[in-house]
Amino acid sequence: MNMYLSLALTISAGIGFGYGLFRLFRDESALYVRMIVFGVGCAMLGRLFATLLYLVNGELFAGFNVGILGIIGSFLFFFSANFWQMDSIVDDGSPKFRKTRLIALVAPLIVAALCAVIFVLYGFNEATISIGIEGLFLALASYFHLKHLIIEDVSFGLIKSIRSYNLLALVYAALCLSEVLVEGFELPLIVTVLECTVLIAFIPVLERGMKKWTT
Image (cartoon, rainbow, N blue to C red; front, side, top):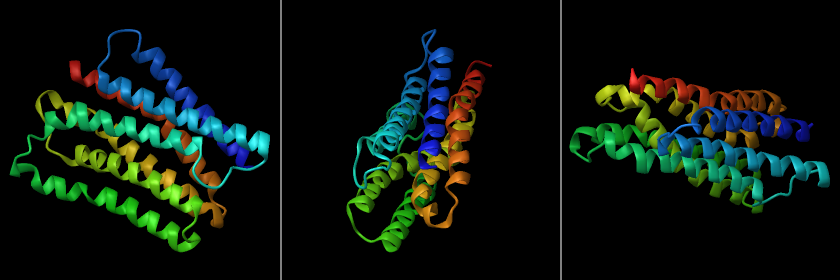
């Protein structure tokens, strides 16, 4: 069953990545957009590794593996896109946005809380420590996703146009950590369906927002 769920995630991420390459790489596109497309591509590679490992080995090795690197890589792309490309445009570092910065800390705190629950349920071992490392990168990315979801908009409606994407990214981060939590509650199918939906929707939602930049 886990192999089929992993395969579904691989296919969904592949659809999202392929759509992004076809729709957004034909012409000159912003680096911000390309980094998000590559982030979905990393998710696809991570899920593909897990699928192949299930196929060959029958189970996924506990602990740090290439599949987790794929998830980390995807959120590193998301983080880099927001941190390097977007944040300097919307936040000049002035006290005006101090409240927004503080509220945005809620996202990494929730990620930390989910990791803490995982440690309580499963203890400290190679598998949970690797999840904690993954959680660190999810927390970094989630801070900027929430910040850009709530921060005051700038000229041309730039932030408003990508709020839906940032919301999806927050949901995806929560789902990635929830995969571990739901294993003991027989809910992996529900989480997988939600993850598949988000992975397919990432780029179309971003593309729809991009169109508002020029309208």
